[in-house]
Amino acid sequence: MNYIFHIVIMINIYIILCVSTNLLVGMTNLLSLGQAAFYGIGAYIAVLSLMILNLPMIPTILLVMIGTAIASLLIAYPSLRLKGDYFVLATLGFQLIFFTILYNWVSVTRGPYGIPGIPSPKLFGIISISGLIPFLILSSIFSVLIVFIFFKLVHSPFGRVLKGIRDDEIAVLSLGRNVTSFKIWAFVISSAFIGIGGFIYATYVSYIDPTSFNLDEAIFILAALLIGGTGNIKGPVVGAVFVVVLPELLRFVGFPDSVAANLRQIVYGLTLIILMRYRPQGLAGDYKLQ
Amino acid sequence: MSDYILEINSVKKSFVRNRVNIRGEGEDERFFILDGLDINIERGKITALIGGNGAGKTTLFNAISGLAKVNSGEILYRKGNKTISIVDLPSYKITRLGIGRMFQDDHIFPDLSVLDNMMLADSDTFGEFPFISILKSSESRRIEKYKIKKVKNVFISLFGKENFFWEKRNEPAKSLSFGQQRLLGLARLFMGDYKLVLLDEPTAGVNPLIINQIINIVRQMVKEKNLTVFLVEHNMEVVLKLTDYCNFMSHGKIAVFGTPEDVIGNDEVRKTYMGI
Image 1 (cartoon, rainbow over the protein chains, first blue to last red):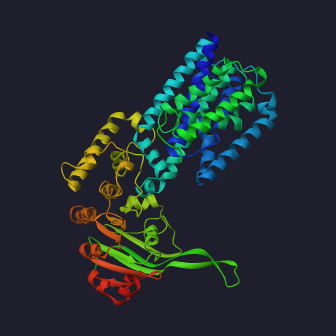
Image 2: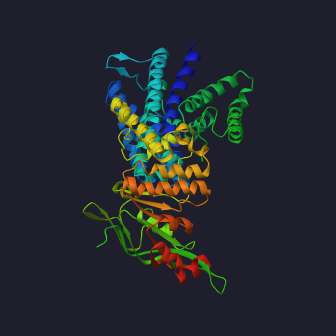
Image 3: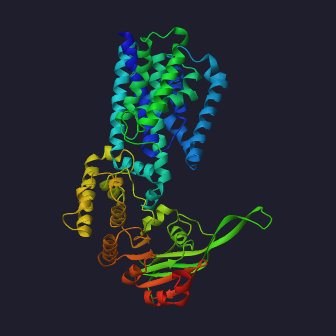
């Protein structure tokens, strides 16, 4: 049963990551390769808050969201002046810089050694959230809450403007909307909620190191989103379930241990290729990425 | 004295193009697509702009709507008693001042529903600030209902009580035919709080039935909404039927100005533009 609980917690974390990234990629057509960096910023701010500032859970989450939002704002301003492929390259550059800093700033991040022994978050400073079932409840509450918030956002007038930008940026400008401002909002909101994913991950695993937030992870989040589909809320949820459950299912196929990990990567790759060819909007998405 | 809503004085806009010289080498050459252009648009009238392909008509529209920055010159817009220089303003601010635009290639939102296309064009932006619709849900819902009612009224006033667009309001706009998309683009202009609208070839590529509908809608814009219309058009029949004034553009300047009959009957226009 613990195994199932662990999988559900990981699904919840990836639902948060994918639903948040969808606001940027699926709703605003801003393909970002830097989302793992915000996931990492959230995780490291959570560690700082819990281990150094000794803050309880709710102030920690607020700090994570504010910190990640500020970091994303600093990235959004220069990179959103770029369009299309240049924006993708700017976010890739940011992702690589972030990883290099994490890896080399040993006095703060302990570099490749990582930070072990991350304490459990304490609700109101009293109730310690540790163990599988409390984390299952915590991650489920957050994933349901975040899905609800993004559902509301996507179906709000704000979401309508974002979808307009996705379809035709010039037309939105000509209707009197400040496109850059909407893109910045999408970037900041997406990143702030991804930060919560980082908080849950860091406190659940109780150990973080830079490899959890590298380019592979950024591509993995994007792949999950594209497999599930963009443009609505169910697509990212399906994608998160798919990428977490698939490798677990492959464990039962009976691949030899020495090649199992590589075979899983091949299965992901093949899935992506087949989907792009036969179902470009993903398993449950509405929008074919341009 | 004429009441001009828009005054454009000595506007220059250049592009750089690469040409191959006599030795077969590529070299950059600066050319002026707008070369000290002057034009005035009278309030409450329909003014046409005609000219050959590449004459700079769309560039002029882009300059007015802030999508292309000019090298020099001034573009003055009169709103009430105020005269505002719009030459350095960003595009969205120019729209908010009351200058609407319909593009040559429509620029509708293909994946949004017909209703969302119209609602996004509304000048009321309440609820578009993130989370406002969650935090002030009742007010947001009320405004959304009001916008839907406004869309319905616009469709009824333009296309009659039983109209295709209201029936198809929940369908994606890409499901409409080219002509219907063109009509939707025009209808969208009735959602904004505009004083001047720029129409870039509104009748290009559509059938005669829709051309007549477009003519009626443009007339409605002027009569019922008191709008000023500035349009680029290649269909001379439409220019004659619809417009009060006509400008012929050539070599980055207005070469001939007058009533549509005078301009279309002008020898230079007939020779260089119509090939007659």
